[in-house]
Length: 314
Image (cartoon, rainbow, N blue to C red; front, side, top):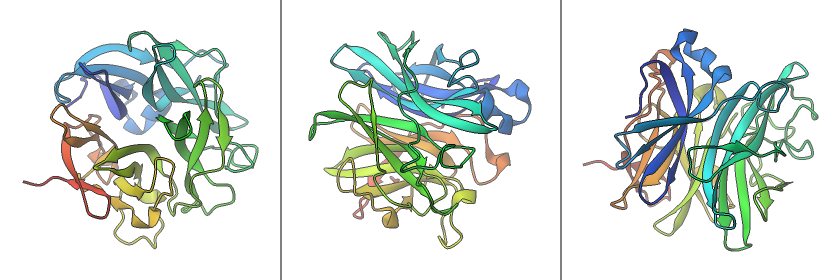
C-alpha cells in the first residue's frame, strides 16, 4: 500500500523497467484541510517497488509551472513510456490552467534519462481539444475535459497513439464522454483525430488504459456516480473494463462492466513478475467520507468470457 503521512495520494500510473516497478501519482498536502481542494494543488510524486506492495519514496517528478503557463495550476494524470529512438523516458501528463474564466486541460510531456529527473518539453502542450470534434473553450465549453493520456506504439501503422479523456462535441451532459485519439511518428508532434467512439453513454470516461490479455484487448476506465446516466441501472462509482477489437477500437461500451474491487477508483492494471494481472488504484468508495488518500495493494484479476475483468476470487 502506498500512503504518506502528510499528503493525500490518488490517481496513479505505473511503469515496469524490468527490475523495479515505478509508480507516479498525484499528491497534495493534507494541510489543505478539505480533500476536495487537492485537485488544484496536485503535483506528481514518484516511488518504486520490487513487489507492487512495498514502496520506496523517490523525489517528486513534476510540480506546476510558474504562471503564465499551460500547466500553472496543477499537473494531473498521465502515463510513461520509453522511446527506443533516443533511449529517453517520456511522461505525458495533463496540464491545468485557468483561461477566460474557465479551467482548461491540455496534454504535454517531459523527458528523463533515468525516471528520476524530468525536463519539460519546450513546445508544450502537444495536444488540446480540437473544437471540430470535441467540446472546448472554442466550442463554448468553459471547462474542458482533455486529460489522462495513455500512449502506446502500434505495430500496424508504426506510429505512436495517444488515447485520452474527452467530450464529444454536442453530446448530452451525461452521455457525451468519449475516447479522444491522436497519432505521432516521433512523440513530439501530434495530429488530433476524431474520437474512437461516439457518445460512450457516460458523463466522463477517465484514466483510460488499453492492454492485451490472453490475446484479447481490454480498456480500463473509471467513472463517478454523478457522471452516470440515470438509465444505467446498477452502475456506480468505480473502475470499469470494456472489450475492444483492437488497441484503437471498436470499443464496446454497451458491454462495460465494473471491476468488482469495491471502492477502487482510477485503477491501473499491471502484470507482476509471476505473470498475474492485478489492479492498483486509490481508495475512493462511494461517498466523500470513504476517500482515504492512499493507493491499495495489487488486487489479482481474471478475464471473463465476455472480455471484461473481474477480481480473482479464492
